[in-house]
Image (cartoon, rainbow, N blue to C red; front, top):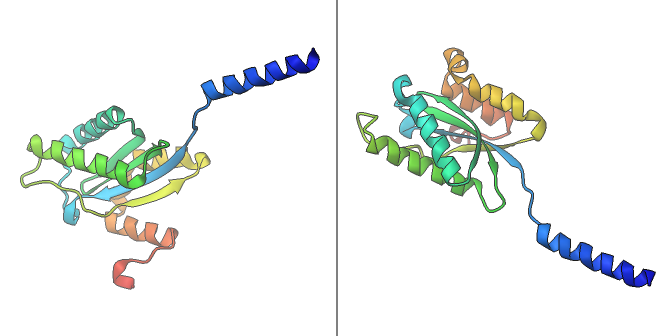
Length: 166
C-alpha cells in the first residue's frame, strides 16, 4: 500500500509540475541607440514625451523596460528580455515604432529616424541599480561628456574597436 501511495504521490507531483511548469528568464540588457547621423533632434521640450511613448509601446508589446533616458542625440534603455525575445527584435520594435510616432506628431523639422546601429551589453542583476542610476542621470552626465566620448568609453570598456581604428 505504501508503494502504491508513493506512486500516486509521484504521479500527482508530476501532473502538478506539468501544470505549473513555465520558463523563468531574466536577461538584462543595456541598450543604446542614436539619432541618424547623431543629429541633436531630441529636444528637451518633447524628449520626455518620447520616453513616455516608448514606455507605453513597450508595455503593449510586452517588452520589460526598467529605465529609459537620453540626451539630444541618443537614448539609453535598460530592458529585460522575455523568453521569446531577441535584442534585435526588441530594438527594432522600439526604434521603428518610436520614429513612426515622432514623425506622425511632427516633432522634428525634418523626417526623423534612428541610426541603424545600436549598442547592447548584458547587465548582471547586481549592477541593475547602478545602470538605472546611470540612465537616470543622462543630462548631468552629458553636461560633462559628449556622446562620442561616451561611445569611445564603452568601446574600450567592452573590448570593441572603433571602425576607424580597424
